[in-house]
Image (cartoon, rainbow, N blue to C red):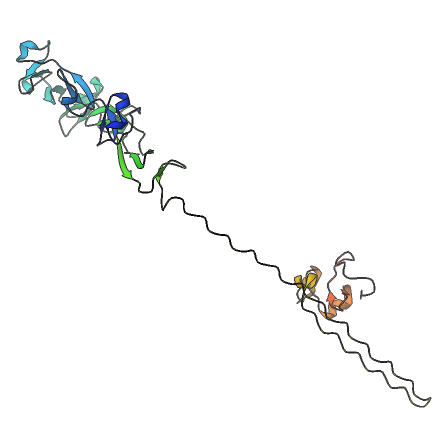
Length: 294
């Protein structure tokens, strides 16, 4: 899995190779013409052969393929031994089941009727995949992705090559290779202003006491003085802003709400504005002093 990914020949010239634009990897050849005389291109690799006019020019156990002017293992079934068949210039064992092939370390391709090296990727070593009956070296990690300039390359499920997608906004490998979504580098938004705090409520004025009644004669009782009017209630602020009227003695015991008048007579105190505050322990609510405790 050491093939160099490519989009054009420029990516392959440092290694003196060519770009297979179908698989997006650098290879030694794409066609026979890339190999020069005396070799053919097979699987991206130049394979040498012996040229011939007839079979007398060929090594032992080979024949001349007159149509291609080169020596091969077989040109027809008659060039193969009994029990074998000629396919793609190779003599292959005939088979009807795997039993016919396993002694040679192969498997039976029942569709074609002869033994092959593999039928699926799992039949090959982990570094190879099954390519039409032959185990071929993987050129990339299956399902892996990488960026090649602005293109996103993704290896297929076999490891045979890459597919390519052009990323209009660029490609990034941060957090795994992917096309960048949206426009690049927009200006940051301007932060909103911080809200200002509300004013603290001002306490109401203290009510004015009534005048003391004047004493009457010995026969009649003196008339009582008038009752002072209560001061106006201030708007909520400070500690009282955090409190609400208690609806039960249980709530009163939490020390976080105003208590009912009845509870105020039991365990609570009044603040400086004569408002009843819950007090669960003597240490609660420092605003209560001994003069206002009930």
